[in-house]
Length: 352
Ligand code: FES
Ligand SMILES: [Fe+2]
Image 1 (cartoon, protein in one colour):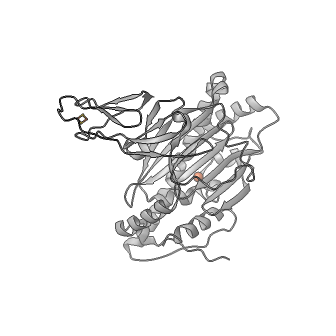
Image 2 (cartoon, rainbow, N blue to C red):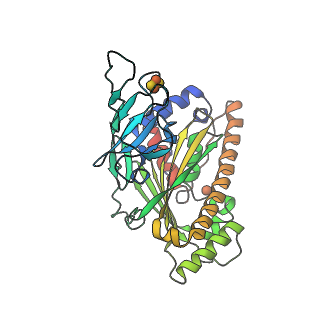
Image 3 (spheres, rainbow, N blue to C red):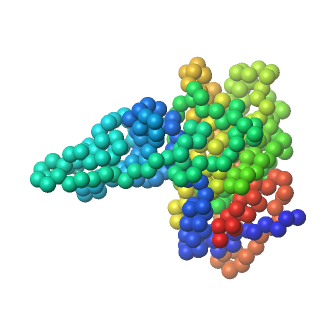
């Protein structure tokens, strides 16, 4: 069995060790900025909650940019939420900027100061925008192009959830299918857990999980409603997969479920907490036609997310007990069902 370099127990609880690990992993890995569908037209903007509203994403016509959302005068917050504008005007003393962040107006200042809000060009990859490099993931050779296809989709909003455990714990649970049997009474019927195909690249892994074979069998209420809606939509020609989970290191998840794509990013908040921003993308025409189908799918998704939180908290509690007694312990990794965990730990250990 391949030797896996586990992160130390200390790295989950010690603030300094965690900070070093986060700095290395996040400087080396990919950096998701937002999605082009958040800003569908020229001059559309979206203030980005995953950057604590520090930046707004702007559609500049041919390009997409992050523009600082903090006024150059007394550092007030400039924009809220989303909208469309060619002029950014600070509410506090009315300094005005154009859509590229160039300072244009400074009322009452005799010697008008020059200024430019910090801005950054972004790399576009399959609709997603990245700071720095784009992912080196060939969607068609991985058989993903027909699934991760945002054509005719719209951004349907995002949900933010804070968790009280180390960010790596979330990643670990995401990258193994072993717990699906025990922790997910609904999901384990919806997908066929061992009908699992893995693909790996240097800094990503992909899990394609087959659709369950007995969708009419007893399940949880949320999955019952969703599976009934799925069967009503597809009849006998059901989709091949129930879920596709792509994880781009260190923190970006692109997920496909029948008819929807979800992009989520997990951010550390110190050593013992993290926050997940989950964005939903739906095909426009189909969503208009059958909103209940999408609502049911989202409820099933949330049910699974709540169970994953419970799984993460179990890991956090056990490891905390070890940490407090100064012990280091790691168990074996099941080579198939937990393959993604080993791959991620290897990548993470190379940061050092
Ligand atoms: S803080 Fe923005 S104009 Fe004063
Ligand atoms: Fe899970």
